[in-house]
Length: 388
Image (tube, rainbow, N blue to C red):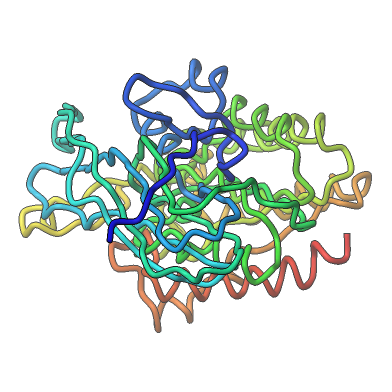
């Protein structure tokens, strides 16, 4: 016997973790930066990253035993490399994993890293089905793939859907690089910010953008305008691997970013987090580049191409940035008691790298995401944030 399915309109009250929802002619597109910021994005990398729904989830209350979600997923194909694994959609019931699914195809974005070009091809709508859920009233979340842009087309259930009641949890707003975005994690709840949020008992808004934690003023304004109870900003790796600025510009840029966030959150606990250990950039400046030898073998690996001698002229390394951030936070905290600093080496340091090396020399694997999430939860939610 086929169950009767009810269609529920996809509206903002059912979506968590997005700053804006764009209604397109093919479906609802969650954005992690608002329209004003998107108009100022200077490159395709950030435009792609902010549309990937890291930390974004549907949340609702229902007695449904079957949930169906129609989506159009965007698959990324990199010329010369094996196809990336399909993104994972995870359904949680009352906070516990109850199902996983993937869209086998969808829109295709083909990227040629050698030429810096990309082309897109539209694809089909696919239905993700989650059967066998408990019959009682429950909170349901569907976490979207952290690295796969997703158009939400339709939500169907075999029972009525209601908005989730307020949990009373604090909202944590976090900004960082591809590591915060979730690079090399396998599932959306397996990225370190999601793991830390669960352990810390907070609701996550994740503004981790692959390749794009560059102290952009429009990101600072987005954070300024987003309600939050706790805020963290992870700074360092993208500034080095993009070779985006020199020491002279770095300090004022950090101050300006923090000033803007503080304009909207004058007393909110604010944590500045420096970079994790990354051997290729500890003492060697950027830019970072693809390891061409690895690419010829069909593998993705990164290498630093800067000259360590150039640090005397102001080129940035992770070691230099950590020292500057510690100094800046110490000076600012004299007049801002709710500002704190967390050394990224306390989340993942040299010894950790010996035991859990970065597979591509830049991004942690799933086990390391878990390690970082557990340590952040202990050091931040169990320490710095709780003391503010």
